[in-house]
Image 1 (cartoon, rainbow, N blue to C red):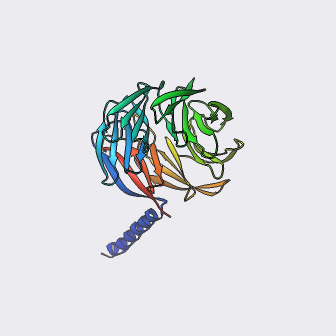
Image 2: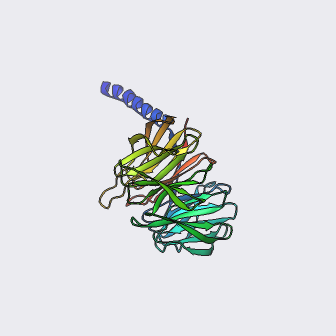
Image 3: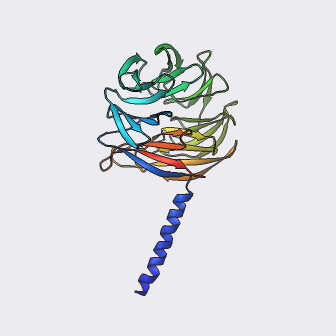
Amino acid sequence: MRKLALWVPAMLALLSVQAGAQDRAPLRLVQSIPLTSVKGRMDHLGVDIKGQRLFAAALENNTLEVIDLKTGRRVFSIPGQSKPQGVFFSSDFNRLFVANGGDGTCKVYDGDTFKLIENLAIGNDADHVSYDPVTKYLYVAYGDAKSGGLSIIDVPSLKHIADIKTDARPGGIKIEKSGPRIFLRFTGTGNLAVVNREKREVIAKWPVTEAKASNSLALDESHHRLFDGTNNPPLLLVFDTESGKNIAQLEGVAGIDDAWYDAERSRIYTSGGGESATSKPPGFVYVYQQKDADHYELTAKVPTRPNSQTSIWVPELNRYYVSSSSNDTQDATILVFEPQP
């Protein structure tokens, strides 16, 4: 009895410490939204901020899942995809764009009925997308490790108007607001690249010697910093966007597929989880604190689930969404995190 009397307070104290640590974490899990019957790997996410809807590309299920964020429920599944990857919703035109890697298209849907209204030919393995709200152009990456490009889609007219040729398939694709540049990573190479979107050409290449594989970038335009989340090895590299100089290097999350900059809190969020046919590597969101433009600290490794590589930070909703693939015991799920002070 005496041992029990000593053990119970000790266990309660340990649980209290663990709960306190969770409360102090920079991200708090506030909701899990199951995507029942969605099989295989999930890919990128898009968001309708005004309508509070999330769009999740189910790459191996060949569907696009529509989630009502007000109710926390999936409300629709759009079939007919061919390895869907990048997703963008235009609130101005109520159109949903889905880059499909299998057939190399960008499929465009009505934002209310989800009926297909256009099927644009893009190129091999259409993947990442990024939108310029000034010109109303959507950039869609395509290609492989030997050649690639950025297709330019005029969103109002739904026309594929031009292509910017690149050395390999672009990844990351971060568009600056204060100038004409696009920052991207070349798949399978050790180069970052800078595109002038007015000239529609690559204007600079920055060799990356620390890692050869990456497709996840985040941009802090106010401090002229570009964050490169690499895979081989997993690192977070910080670059000066004016000079291309490597400013800092930190430990990175394995299996990364998305990186985001939280300007209000001066944080970087990177999501990863790895993929393996024989094991289930754990998933994490790595959170980095920006102390100033040149100094950074890895402050937390927030656990998610295996195969939780993709994510989206939505500052307007103050939420960070992580897409978790299904496995032998769990359905595919959207994990919803709220940033903490």
